[in-house]
Image (cartoon, rainbow, N blue to C red):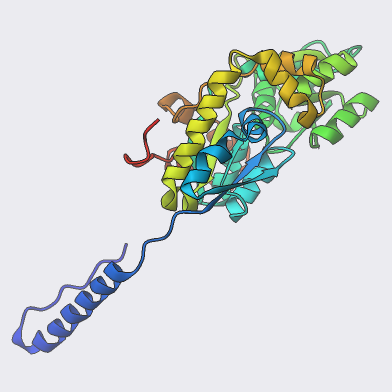
Length: 332
């Protein structure tokens, strides 16, 4: 912030002072007459093929809630968190969800990112897998091996922590940056030695290939799901953000007690059999809420770890990107 110059209180500067005061009053009047930025008439939501948002889309409950308010809903599907975060930063969507690592990279790239809520940790919902007959029996056996994972996704941090636990330097393994579909193909044909992946792809690999869990995230990474928006949207449309979060909360409350029904509803859109989804849903957590101190602290540890590894160009402060709903919108 630049320091304003001090006006000299002498008679010689009287006209200049009056001129400045007149200009200031004119500017204030202009600002008062200028209309405030209007709330959005459409909320554009990015979702992945799993979790509460895809259920919300399928049930149409958010559209029914927002229609009386004159707000439409547009949905865009993404294969994983990183491209969804890129779209959010670019202003192509207004709201979405992702795991732990994608929003950290997004915050490093732009000041637009806003954390608006989180689900509880679900460390059983991601894992490092090896083929059924693999000679790899422990994390220590990963040294020198090729590991597939989606760069910048939630399992990125799981892999970092697993290698750290085994005493393996990050550069002592071969990293294959592959999205879920390509990683699955590489895993099946034996082109990679291990695969770090999340549900429901994790559950599908167990069922289809007999993949063995080398480790899940218990004791290594929280594996939270975050709901995210961008500053340009939270500033102008906090009430819409609040309505979306309330709708997610309602879906969460329902889904927590109807696993089989949820699996049956998700199966057609995800392309994974309902019995497999039931396994994945058993490892999911429910209960959307504002970020608490533990969630912020966990995210900060991840950000600090990525910076130490040279994966972030500069340190960042996660708390700077946490949205606090204004009182008039905080009705949950």
